Image (tube, rainbow, N blue to C red):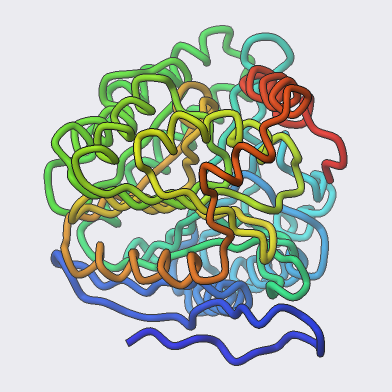
Length: 397
């Protein structure tokens, strides 16, 4: 049974609390889910401290704040006790700066940047987040390394989800990290064909056919992409539940969502708060057609939303990808696909808990808010987000 984390908010703060961690054994794997920010940080530190032989880490954003320093220092300590530590961070998301990781390299750990140069490749970001411990356990999900992703809702932290996994899928993470590590090494050597090489890695990736699969995505790749598999699951589905911090899926997927809404049930939780105003605007542009397809819409406004969670019938997707064009077409992403009814039910209970503290978006709500000026703003945000959310946003941190 899921429990709710004890309230930690000051007097007058919202009553909403994230759920406590919970564990499941399903499909030949052991899962522990972490909806609560501070639990995610504790679990990450504990994993690093437990490492005996190796740590392989890939993050989009790494900050030099309190949480980032705790994680870096734990990695340094691991390297000093003889653990092989390999850290890769996206160059765009490396808010800490390269000098921040000097203690890690001094301790004989390795640090590298996923760093496409200016030009076409500048738009390509590593948006993944995962840690492999001793080649036996992995932690992944939507959370980066920054205070924002571990703060409690009362402090307007990101509402997110991470999961630790033990089981056969860990072998796929090990293989995937090796491919990305080799690509980054080639990028550092200045190869002019690295974008093509990255696309080939994604196109040729085989996540297997078991109940738990590591699916990936990358720039301008369609077949074999995580979204390609999602499309196959959606075609005949009768139930859909999603939480997505950024929502601007391609038209073909919106049509699939609408069909599920008309023939079964579909529920979507959108951001009511974000550090990027465009994230809210671009989703609202699409509300009208979704509502006409009988999809139940909600905006989660307790705190900033960053979760990426999809449940299609008895299949759950957890990972780094949003239901937006960047995640479908540009970013390097990963999603763990779990085909298990018990896991799907548990993920829906997370969404149920969030729905209770969300605002229902009704046709009447949409009629009030979709003024001509608002629709113009929403449309501008929608088209600009493909290049970069930060271009279309004001007040971005």
